Length: 516
Image (cartoon, rainbow, N blue to C red; front, top):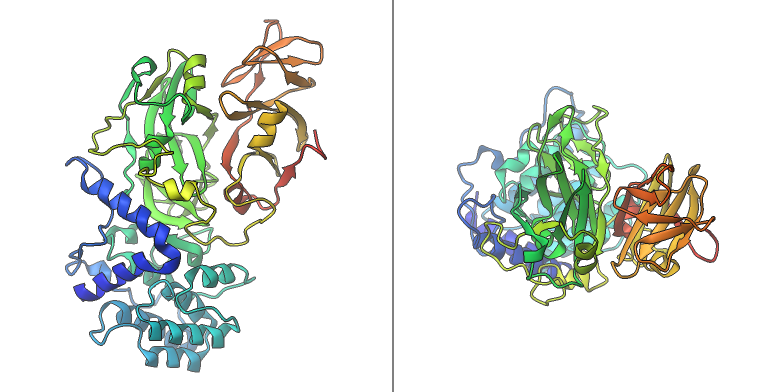
């Protein structure tokens, strides 16, 4: 491997115009990891360093597999694909070579389109970008710049069918294995998958480069003087034990493997799609912990389990690449609430909260501090990564509560629910009460049975059609009449609009003028 070539590629990746915000976040992550203690997780790549990967046998793409015979046309196109890798990393002449692109035009094999699109992320010089853009134009009929990865990737997602060449999986992961050779454990030739491998994107960090919290340190809520009452936390209650996970801490870790109320749980937070989901930490009858793979699909993180190294889609809790694909296993989602710290603490005075001392030498800035990680992303409209088939009904980062019942999905704009107080709705044959809390800035969903509810003048309560009071808890609506069964919480996701509709495109949007 040509170390200088690798350094040029890294620098280019970090400075392409459409990736400026990404580069800032990537640099912040690298700085955070670099100053962590010795027992921290594997660090993210520092874009100013030159990793020593010369000894890694996985740094070169694997040959075309022989288990499935390939046609002569497939083999010829695959040789061009592998040649592009050599041009990027190992050719002393430097950069993408015109003969490789000319050969791609001679072959006109549709399987060359996905790797050429991937290469748009690596274009090193203006002439290379121009040649690459022209080649893709002649193969596809589309006209985007040769270094416009966003546009080419989004175009690829509009195609009803794409073709990939033999060895494509190994080739693709080899592009990013210089940043972390262990990526080959996740993606390799022949790996079972339920998502298109050409849709997987490298997120800019190594495996666990955003280090998960393992049994995070906690303190009593009374001692959490570092938290502003108005800042957001993920609030959880299991078997009577309450815990708050501040956004300011979870933004830097995105994953917490924890035990609460005697239950093993994983809080998985995809900052890119604004989706925090609490999963029960059990897979196929065994306790499991999860990490961050460094890869994304549809701007949603792919997490991995530490036993089989299968990749899981954070948004759905399903295995999508690896050993457990097709197993029928799906992670069990548990109730969790996004709330302001002050309101959460008032409602749960015995809560514990993550300590700001987690064994990492870093400062967890208030999310509204310009120095905070992801500050620009959360305060801007743009996405960092392209997404296929975006629903543009709402702004991409509009906060919604996404709810599913059977095959039916619906999204409720959080701001509208909070303004309404209570939304009585029916979804897939299930009667729901979607309840907003203005003080806590939270929205929750409950099964309401045959009752309809309105907001009470007493905080933390709702009234049914008979005027009976029901207390809003994290598990259920609890009646003042102890003879009535509690109405259970309905699992839901507090998430950005694009993050919900990308994975549940059939979703309906609740509007106060037409529903409820």
